[in-house]
Every structure is written in C-alpha cells, then in structure tokens.
Image (tube, rainbow, N blue to C red):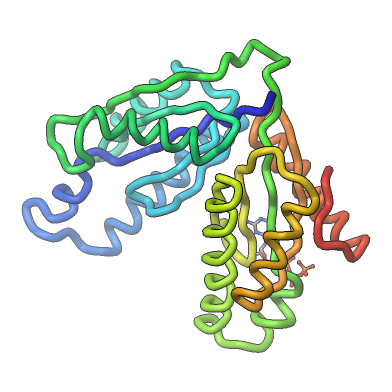
Length: 252
Ligand SMILES: Nc1nc2c(ncn2[C@@H]2O[C@H](COP(=O)(O)OP(=O)(O)OP(=O)(O)O)[C@@H](O)[C@H]2O)c(=O)[nH]1
C-alpha cells in the first residue's frame, strides 16, 4: 500500500516577530527565510525527504524515512541557530492532501500561528521506517516543453515568469482538486508533485487541462520509491525518457 508522510513546518509566532519592536528590514527577512529553507532542504534531503518552500513561513515536507527523533533534532537545531522556532505536524495517508490535512490539524490544535504560547510543538504519527513492505511514495516531476525556446530566449524575465506561473497555478489546482496531489514550483520551469498512485491517463488529463486552461505545454516523469528522493530521482529519469522518446508521460 502507498502512503505519504507529510510534515507541515510552521514558524512559531513569526508575524509578530517580523514587526517587533518595529518592522524589520525586508531583505533581512528574505535572508532568514531562504536560509531556513536551505537548512531544511539539507537536513531533510540528507535523510531522503523533500521539502518545498511554499510560503516560507509555512513549508511542506514529504518525510517518508524520517522518524520522530529526526523531527525533534530538526527543531532543536533550528532553535539553537535561528531567532525563531518551528512547530511540526506530521500525517500519513495514501492521499497526500489528506496527510497534510492531518498534519495541519495537529499544528493548529497546538495553538495559533501567531500565539506566543506555542513553541516547538511536535505532533503526529510516523510511518514505521522498519517496515519495508509498507509501500512506496509517488513523485511526479513536471516540466514545461521547450521553456527556453518559448520563453527564456524570447521574452523578458517577468513575462517568462508570468507564463510559467500561470501553468503552475493551473496544474497545482487541478492536481489538488482531482487527485489530492500536492504540486510545488521548484524553480526554472519545474514542478514536483507528491501524488497518490495515478495512471497514465490521469497524468495525461492533467497535461491536457493545463494546455487548454493556461496554454502551457507540460510533460511529466513519474517515479516511486521508499523515500521521496528515490521516487523523485526515478521521476527525473522518466522525464529524460520523455525527452528521448518525445512523449508527454513516462513512468520509471
Ligand atoms: N529544480 C529543477 N530545475 C530544473 C531541473 N531541470 C531543469 N531545471 C530548470 O529548468 C530550466 C529549463 O531547463 P529545461 O527544462 O531542461 O529546458 P527546456 O527549454 O524546457 O527544454 P525541455 O525540457 O527539454 O523541453 C533550467 O534553467 C533550470 O532552471 C531539475 O531537475 N530541477
């Protein structure tokens, strides 16, 4: 059986901190946020997980392979090195959005995002990493066809960005609503999605939808594995197969 373990990372009481004792310089906040994301990417990535920056004050991670102790150490390390702390909620489900719902409810139950009483909450269930038979996580790596020729080499960066973001917005909504999948922009023209077990036709449906809705042509490689890294790495290979075969959907 497939099951994704999702972790919501939420900075504790960040809103008030950004304006106390008076508004902080924006580029200092940007530096903090991007460094925190980089640290999470390294910590979680080294353990086979994936993390996405989403809104920076809240980040979403796929943490199959990370146990409670890994989460505790992450909180301790952030707390030691940053002027902010993070709360973590963890959920497990075949459908990624359901796992994230559970993870989110657990953080919300511990207190508001803007409560000075909540600090380093950790709540959740963890997949048993010892159980090899527990099943795979599915990762889809979407990429815009010839983004370089269509956008990067032709348009200014802002208009390229609008085109890519429109495709992303269309895809993320469709995948969430139709399949409970979570799609995240990861830079360039790339979107990585944590998905349930979907068929070739279901991925084709997503690609057709984005082409009609946002006039952006995607292709996708899909991989499965015990950890997000294994699944995502296989997905990258499948995407290379798309390039080689000239196809729009390939499974590793
Ligand atoms: N995050 C991430 N970004 C990537 C990856 N591969 C490419 N990119 C980004 O995507 C941009 C475009 O690269 P490609 O997707 O290879 O180029 P393309 O013009 O769309 O060509 P085709 O994908 O072959 O149609 C690059 O400048 C990178 O920023 C990847 O595996 N991960």
